[in-house]
Image 1 (cartoon, one colour):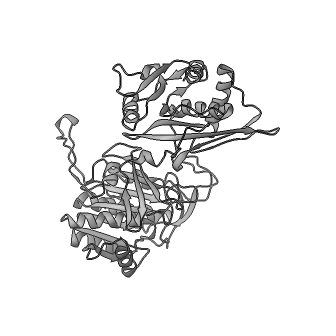
Image 2 (tube, helix red, strand yellow):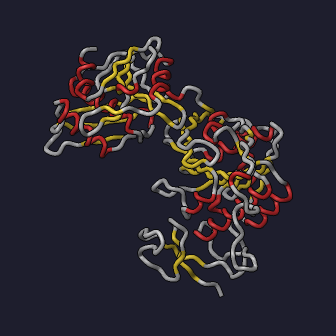
Image 3 (cartoon, rainbow, N blue to C red):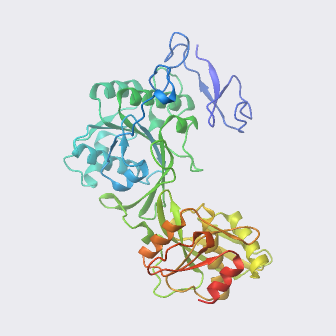
Length: 455
């Protein structure tokens, strides 16, 4: 007789009865009723499940031979950048994003490019029929593609196909539709997602197959299913972007084979997703002349410096002035306004303040502080900043301007794109002059206001 248990969607822990709070991770309302796996299925004679990676003899770190992982380029440069250089043999990649944002399109293009380079590929679809996948391939201009397609949702049939065909790269679209007949719970449940992902991971490690799992996301934007799913895989990618915009961002949240927070920028066209070679152009508005309330900063996304325009609008407010930010931390905006008033004498307590990062990009690093303050000051006074002006740096509560990491790379990227004036923290000032770029090094917010007033 099947036994009912309650699994935590956050940590994967189990409980014999429903509780308002998970006894393991203390998360509230995270226990989901599932039917437990029948005894003995998927376990060895000791009652333990096999590990996700093949067993190896006991060795010391000094005696283990370590070598770089061989990578296979996917044929899409921006995707390779996010992955850390390409596909890794035996690696498991989880990619999530909103419905219709382009996950299946991107992976189908990557599989076709790999197949044309001599790699054996497999596309397993659990949400569409083979005819629907073929129609999409024709819309993308992939006529004559030799990518193998399997329309299946049963895990056991997928595993037998993987072992029989031995592809180099396989895509499972999506992991929430896969079910194992060893479990009685419904597809997409915590137990099914966890067990199916674990079996596919074991196959990837033992057979040397690169497996890409497509994951659904919740309305909050997190990957659906247990959080342990993200711990099992080697790489977690998130597809970001507005479905009403033609630009998409693929961001690495976790990567055992490369840098995290690396991004790839794509443009959605009639023939699918195309990589954007100069992503800074997306996040910069094209003003014929400088306008008040606009300041350009250089942010870092992984290893890539990007120029992003910060726009601010300061307008007369009512008894309760509003502070609204898009793409930036709202709480940090309130803190910066207090610092601007206390240390620079610029008051906005009776003004509505709106701040926006152009292009839909999200900036989480504090190096945007200086650009935000300068954009607000420019809008309040109605005076535009000079043409070709950039700024970056963190601002502390005491009014000090702190350095940003890898400041030299930021300045070189700005000079390469034709910017001529920069206000940066003193610690980020270049030791050697950068051709075409005049750098003003500052230590406090008062010096920033005075330096801009004199330009």
